[in-house]
Length: 90
Image 1 (cartoon, rainbow, N blue to C red):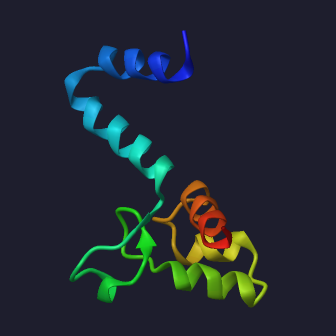
Image 2 (image 1 turned 120 degrees about the horizontal axis):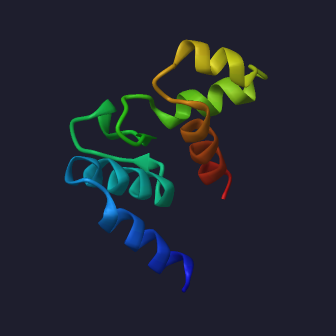
Image 3 (image 1 turned 90 degrees about the vertical axis):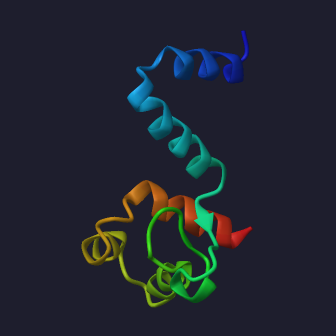
């Protein structure tokens, strides 16, 4: 059984109220950056937040440690920030 099949089986076994959360998480893993009209001036942002990606990039370029970034944007979370910054490098 491959990993995709295993994941689908796990999601199917979840209680109905958790299915949307699981699907949102999988979607965030696939693309942590989101662009939406009328949100953040249509700038790229961390999925499901109002944190522009350019803000994270600017913090990183100025040499700010991750702890400072997370203290200023606790809604971002270390995992989302890392994913977004990795996507901007590629």
